[in-house]
Figure 1 (cartoon, one colour):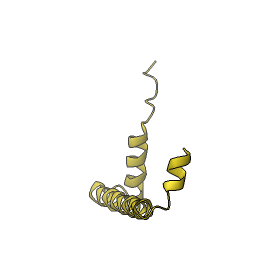
Figure 2 (tube, rainbow, N blue to C red):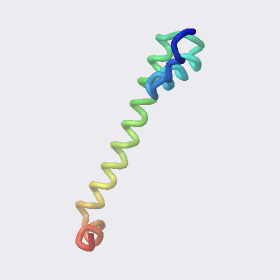
Figure 3 (spheres, one colour):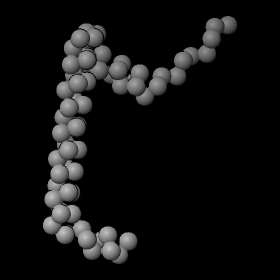
Amino acid sequence: MGQPAHKLTEAETIADSYLALAQGNPSVALRLVVRDALQDLATVEKALDQRNRLISRGFLRVNLVSA
C-alpha cells in the first residue's frame, strides 16, 4: 500500500485556494495574496490608530482602572 494522504497545512490550503482563483497561474496567485495581505494590514492599522486615539483622549481609562 502507498503512504497515507498528506494532510494539508493551513498555509497550503490558502495557497491552493489562491492558485485555483488565479486559474493555476502562480504569478497572479502571488499578486492576489499580497493584495489581500496589504488590505488586511491597512484594516488592522486603522483599527489600532482609532483605538490609540481613544486611549490618548481618556475614553478607555475607565475600563483600565476597573480591570
